[in-house]
Amino acid sequence: MRRRVLLACTTATLGALATLAACATSDGEGATLAPVPDGGATIPDAASPEEVDATPRRDASAPVWSACNDHGWCETELPDPNLTFIDVWPFVDRAFAVAESDTLGTKVLEWTEATQAWSYIDDNSQNAYGSGQYAGKMYAPSENELYFTTAPGAVFHGTRASVSAPFTWESTRLPYDGPAYADRDPGRAWSVENPGWQATRYAPALGVTGTSAGDVYAWYGNRIFRRTSGDGGAPEWVAEFVTEDPSSTADESFYIFNASPASSDEIWFVGGRGPSDATKGFTGCPTLFRRTLTGYSTVLDFAYSSGNCATKPGTIQPDVRIEIPGYGVLQLPIQPKGWATAVTPIAPGAALVLVGNELTWFYVDTASNVARYNYAAGVNPPAALSPPLLHSVVRVDDRLWFSGHGIVFGSEIKPDAWKDCLGIGTPESFAQAGTGYGALVEKTSVAMKERYLDEPLYQVRGTSTKNLWAVGNRYALHKKTP
Image (cartoon, rainbow, N blue to C red; front, side, top):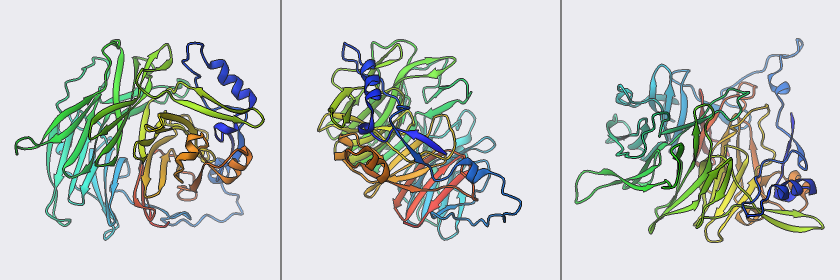
């Protein structure tokens, strides 16, 4: 398949610039930015649906399939075929995962290199009556300690004496005292962004993360909690931060969707705010929060009104730099729409933020006070899809890894290029742009059994480039080759 993509801000044509300028308002609200249908380059994908899904010719031999594809991604056998993996937490010789199933509820699993198999390690208490409707993010400080989350706002903590011993589990209900809506779940947002597709998109506002065994955080709805032990007593979950707006209307919801620690001194949280509709669900604007030793700060926040996101005072105004040969560089404010669903640290005070699960994203640098629009080119999956496309982004050593619907790809880390909106792309795409090089994309294929993987991969994580996991609906893929 060939698909038109916007290579980077610098490839915008005069027509695209005119469109942006026309969207700008006189009161400084800025332009509403969406991928531009013209002015991009045609980038051939790795394979088209016709190439990978077509019925073979009668004179063609049947493909020989192995457990691993040519790019080193290996399909691991699941204990049940209908598991949807929500998150994975890897170590060198093992990995933990949390999954959902229509028949089994929420399940927690462990993979070991020694057995080359997944096994259940939970005690099924997470599926007690009224619990376990859906799972959130997980965190493992060590091979013998593990946290996972389930609705409605429960955190499970497991410990064991050694890797050969069983886990002992305890659970705590987060002391959530936020809005209790009659018509919506405070722990999960949903939307039908394209009624023609009739596909409902969900985003759990529930999870746990940490920087060490003694520094653990959880979130649920619009609140962030920290596991705290006061006066030598048993640890408790204490609310540290609330995202809300006293001037908001009754139909406006606030969510924390994801988190990523940069160090013991810095953790990033992303979410969204906006109105909820009984038919279309949640629509909103992205939010970004940063926790440091001095407390929480709001980096990105917007007031939603009539389909627009206006930057709130005291937060960073996102913008885009557009270079047109012969005309110079223009810098325009923009209004990002959609939820912020994933974040990963780039440098102290800087992070990459995925908005709307699309190939567009923002490089945010608090020291420079910038939130720059960027784009990932040449990584579209070989199928026509409706959003969402990307689900996760993580930093593994000196590279970034993204996962989405049927795709995984890597990238260099180039903050200076991202400040100029050069984005992520191929050598060909940057050469066509003719205005400089951004971060080079590292393409890899997760096609299995000689066919395109038409399933969402909700999370990619790894301990190194020789130990990557990508998990999602009915798949847990492992890559041990660089």
